[in-house]
Image 1: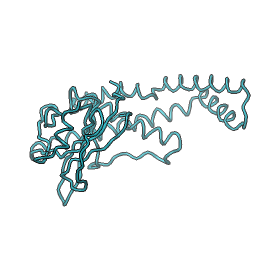
Image 2: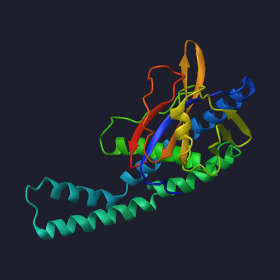
Image 3: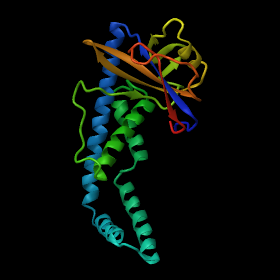
Length: 244
């Protein structure tokens, strides 16, 4: 499911989980971490296979040659376009597209008993794909797998099922936990009037205690109200523009 491209903003609220719920939340976040690492490892394996393909390597060298020409001729530009298309077709045969990894992660998520929804698994796969792309195109020198206990954000694509907000509660399959809304917080109350597009769940260690926060992506523009920023308990509005 493709995310909406309408104007969006984010309101961040703390989530109050019971101790029993916290253990289950951590178990699900651990599944997301393992899914991320699994996707990243498979991407690197497919990448090594692609690099050994002679047709792809020949096309890559020729594209690099054309790119080095200061003013390529129309024929060379046409050739480069055709070569890039050929390279994409070969990459698809090796399973190196984001769409193919969305299909791949379905089986991975099934292996873990669907502890998180398919939407959340696919968003996690997309993050792994983005990490791989940075490595592939030279924006990073190596990929970094997430060690056990590392912070990982779990994010949905919509507010229809899986991790979502219902009323003033965070709902995640069988878990229901209240969002912490301060009495008289008009900003948060006004924000709840707007449609929720999707939500992401993250944690922070504050004064030696792990606390959980929901970043709720709302449709529209932030309510016009002054608010205090700086307290971890405060509602924070962030305008993320039309590309969420």
